Image (cartoon, rainbow, N blue to C red; front, side, top):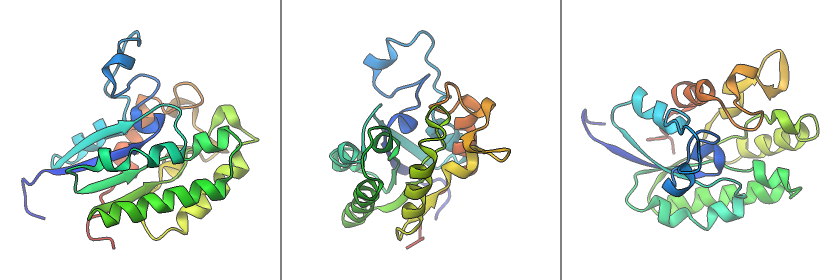
Length: 198
């Protein structure tokens, strides 16, 4: 990869991609936030860590994997890499993790059909959903691991070693989403390009 070349990365997902609770790519949503903070998104930190990258934030709060999939082509237009993140809202709404995994796998396939390199983030621990959500999250992450794709290990980056199934307290803002420090860890430690991985 030549030095100085810009790489457009389309980041497609739910509120974790959007940067909740302190950021959202939609200016209308940000207008309702008391103090929006652009550091509250993994994309911000990934761009700082690698100056080649331009990350397009296509996160929408509350969306399930089927809803995320419906936006793939619009988000991916003109990009070279697609990062897909999602699944926690399927779990929160009591939907099948197998269906969520199938939706994620289909997005990987569609991204490749469009000529993109594709990465798939696994699902973060959910403090406010613990312990009920822990088993389905682990099941979905196992299914994600079985998909033939470059996996971004978001779960491992924020899971508290002393409290499995939960994010460390200083890595979450509200028990649902990362804190600024949590997003920094995702962007600096868990984010990697899938260039040449397939």
